[in-house]
Image 1 (cartoon, rainbow, N blue to C red):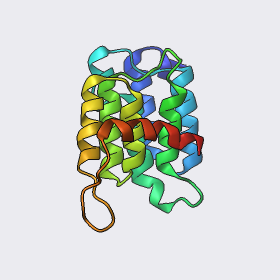
Image 2: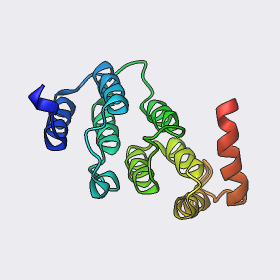
Image 3: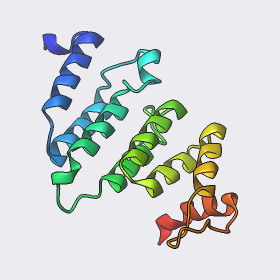
Length: 159
């Protein structure tokens, strides 16, 4: 019990568990743990790349290449969406960090969806910029308006 008495110890334990996690099931347990028992409340940490949800996302993306039957982008998007109506809802800075991790891992669609759903003006602008730079399979720029595509991203989940 002494491991969880204060925030510093909870964070230390969380980071230790995160570092030892390599399987999808272990990351799922960490996600449940974060919802039940957030290790940090410090605003500066919550709004940075050190946010526990950002750290878990990074861990998942670092280890997912060895997992079969798991779609890391979809799982991360589901994780973020599950927080929309909870006290753990991610702030725009964290959504931006997670989106960057997704983009750096080649998961553009999931990153675009996450940023579009955030309703944050800066993330929406970034989404539109990224969409405008998307090219078709033959290397030519797409001829659709950015706003139209953002709305289409929301509709893709219904398909």
